Length: 400
Image 1: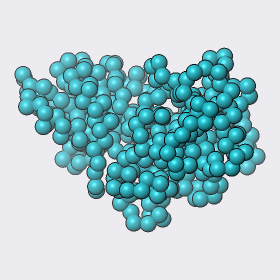
Image 2 (image 1 turned 90 degrees about the horizontal axis):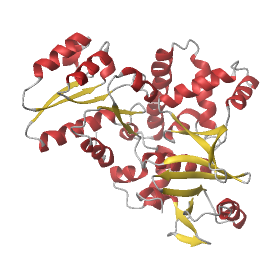
Image 3 (image 1 turned 120 degrees about the vertical axis):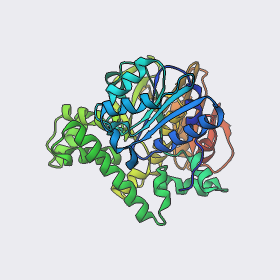
Image 4 (image 1 turned 45 degrees about the horizontal axis):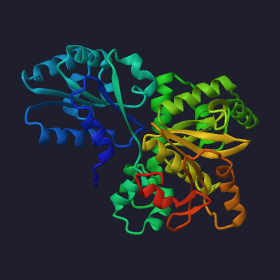
């Protein structure tokens, strides 16, 4: 398979070399966690002549004999070299029985630099503090960004490339297949494995039809404000018996497995979070087409989803803004930076343009305001609002 170096994630790992935290590489299934660990191993090998790398990949048959905690500990201890920088790198760590006992033991010995990847069923973000007694440093890996997609395919025309990315998405394992049907079949299998193996097995869910119906509902309603009560009512109306409490629990499972990302509402005037009606965005747009097909082709909502994940990928805190009963798609924050962002498809119709800029014009503070849309033009300003083409926005590392 063709590879590109994912420098943002690699740099994160490089920056924490020698720090005594347990480094945990997480993210949705098949997003490239194992490849990232391999890239990091290669970097350490090239740059640290005193490195002793103890690398275990449980996908390989030769490590089948290390699938019990005591055997893993014994193996690592025998591989330890005094007066060297000893790195432990374990891929698919959950395949070792009582793996957390082994990792906690290595951390307590204070002589290893520890890096692990694993199935999101066992390394969900909510579980890390419970699993490990030592402090963890999480590197969250996302599917390919549009910028990475362009690099992978060596695309010259980003407008044409963006149209393809909207449909193909960033699940790079699908890029090996020649036609859309085969690509979507691969992505559907990733989805099914995530629902059935990761979530069903971990939480002992007997009826997977209910959580599949919930996932399908959320996919069909990306970028819409939703609540557990509303979802329960909609599913009950379709003869799916479920309570709002179960909905809340199952949504948390889906988010912990990195299939969806929850974005809370933020009252811009009151400067506080609102407790009702959140938005849920898919980890990658390709899941929408693989699971539901091309029905309900609302490109505006798909574009909004793509921008939401890109903002999270860039490390922003992301909220849905509310002001005078108007909605601002995103209020993003990072340290002292704050930006307001609207996302749209076609703004060439005057009424659509006015609808999109109207909420931004009502904001009284001086923080930057951006309208991201499918303009296919260079960035320009309208009454202080930056109007940015979405392909250009995604190709840059900056919001403006």
